[in-house]
Image (cartoon, rainbow, N blue to C red; front, side, top):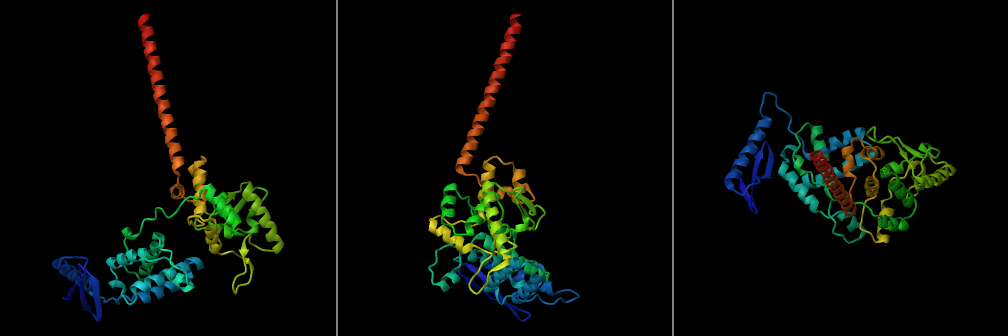
Length: 380
């Protein structure tokens, strides 16, 4: 046995079938660390024992390549690109490791280290910009852990990820106020202004707005048909209010003159020609620039969908109708999109107070009538 300490934690270091196993025991007590090392060796032996000798699990690099090959034929380009970015991040932390040697403790170290990592650090350094101090979000870490789990599933191995490792994401979204909306739209360039307004007035997802086709806009019945989505509920007809209708009427006229299939087609870019047969892919730069010019606290374009849902709930739209408008399969999903403001919660508390007072008044009135009836009966 080769035990040594790193800080207050004991680590073990030994060789098994030509492979070096170097891991944290997770214990400060040496005796407990020795037991952990013995258990780790026993687990490795159990994995190799039996009448049929299994091939040893591959290194993480081989698992990643196998997963990428499978992803190419099973995922859409956007999803595939996300998994590839996650794979690059995972390799930075686990390169050279055998897949059965990556323990839950190692994954937990990856999770905590990643949450402290500065967001877009490498990109900012390349562009010569100062780091703004923002760190990687819990949702980004969760996506990397989900990719790691898929990599293990493809190899037929038990994933070292655990449910408790997935960070909570509360507070990652916020509702844009009417005042913020006014300043933001005033500073927005086109087509960002029209896209943002459509999200605020329809509750559609940004990618759904990006992919609106001229043939799916019905100006007569004031609706948009969205044929895209993973679920049946996402493929829906979306009603238009007057402002959204005016924007789409103008945009459809422009698209028809340009003979474009899409209302918002792919614009020209550095080294890229204009493509009227392809929808716009992203407006993140324009979105961030509009927020900076307006001097607002940063929010995501997707938060405009949360703003729509919250305002609809505050206006009294029932949860079943709101779920249908948002394209949700279950009403439980709506709770993730509705964020009541302090003023709205105070108003709800006031309504409850008035309702309770009304119940008490009715109870007193019934008691008084009953007492009056009893008195009249006794007099007779």
